[in-house]
Length: 203
Image 1 (cartoon, rainbow, N blue to C red):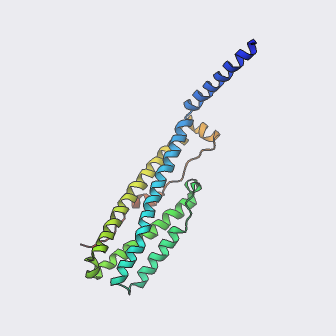
Image 2 (image 1 turned 90 degrees about the horizontal axis):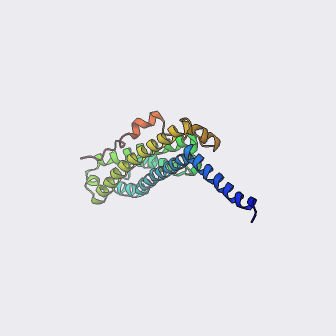
Image 3 (image 1 turned 180 degrees about the vertical axis):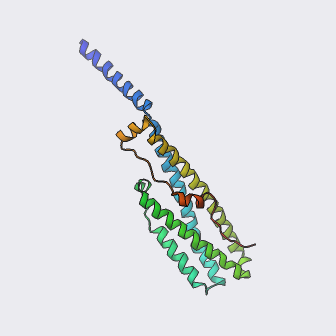
């Protein structure tokens, strides 16, 4: 066994340890962890929107039984649901400000359409007293609350990630590895998402 064959493994091990410590010290691991947390929190936002979307057909069906003449409202709900469902959710969306804006706008439109649908119940006492309708409106209210919680959590995760990406010295690491700040919900939308959307369920 030569001296060279002994030194080479030791040298490689030293390089590996140094590289690992360098990546840890420069914030790379923290950036990766925060990036994963952002993705996970976004998945929960999408999950809750999907939960709401799944409620819509049943809500419309029940309302139609008592208020079939409210065609304009039904059309608005169908259009909003189609637009919201027409946006493909991909990992790239989290790094595309325009795509994020379109997604948020589509979901806001869905919220408005559902508010109008639920307001219809005020004109139909029989609908308001229907047990299935009451159950569905309770599910919708709970889902809207979950959406609010999930979106606020996502906002906080993105804020933390973006702060790390911009701060020195982790901003250098982020630049080296092509990690940039992620788009968040706009300031105009933040006020609306700080609380559950107003949906009039009646007394």
